Image (cartoon, rainbow over all chains, first blue to last red; front, side, top):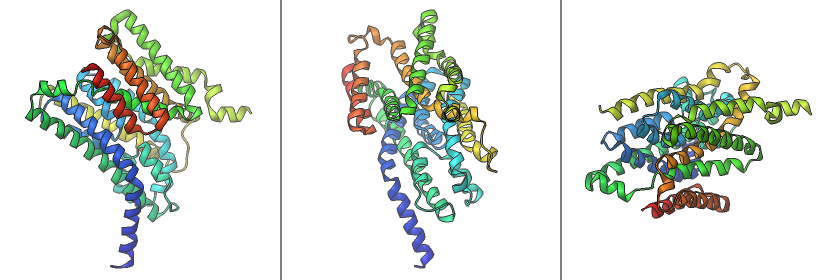
Length: 260
Length: 111
């Protein structure tokens, strides 16, 4: 084997080892999301939808929300606004990856751009090489491994759900898995706890909690829980952004720096 | 394709496209070293924890909608499972452990 081959192999191995912590998390959480989708959709096509949505959304929260959206028939507008609010941070991540991805060919760059997640980004910024061909290749394999774990996990979960419903009856599976949808609540609680470990995230989290609770409370008072839950997302996000703009002098790290 | 299929196809296109464009935005706009406007940097940096907090409220709104207050535990199952999830996560910091135990407790309580 020639030297170039050997360096390539060691680079791929390095990327794989670095991605191992993500392997368990993505496959397990993906499996549960796929299972929930199959239980909700109830058709054999769930596996196809699981594979396609996980490949293109590349997001845990969105994958879980998908199940709720299908159940409720949430308007596309609300799903798009929520996607923007959840994923706008990836635009900021991208800024620090501009140089790292420069050496990649266009198709590879397009793929790496589309597969950035919190975990993949964290691993890519830890890349042991300075920006250049090696670093780009390493980042590409990280993206590929993480993406693969997620798609395989979600699709396997959906297949498991389909097979379970085929072997037993749909009603039987539904009664055995009753309450499993709490996994979505638990996922958001866990993400929130992790974010609140960083002091700068605490005020934004409290703003989000208060604003959305007020919106839900207000809507429930006038229209009942069901209508309030279905229509709370957009007004909550508008209120959150308005509060952020109102308190910018206190919260914006760049403004605080300028004032000091 | 059934009604779910049509809805899912629309979601796949809408959410998939917006997801991709958001990730691609800096590469499209700021490839030449320009920075996004300060207000976008500010909002973008603060939004994630606020939206996740909103989604927690959204999940509990779903429980209220499904009538969790009129169950035998009067919403106690949701609160107990959430408390266990948070406590485990503060203690051990292992996402899978916290989510699995919280969900298992909830499934046990509502079974």
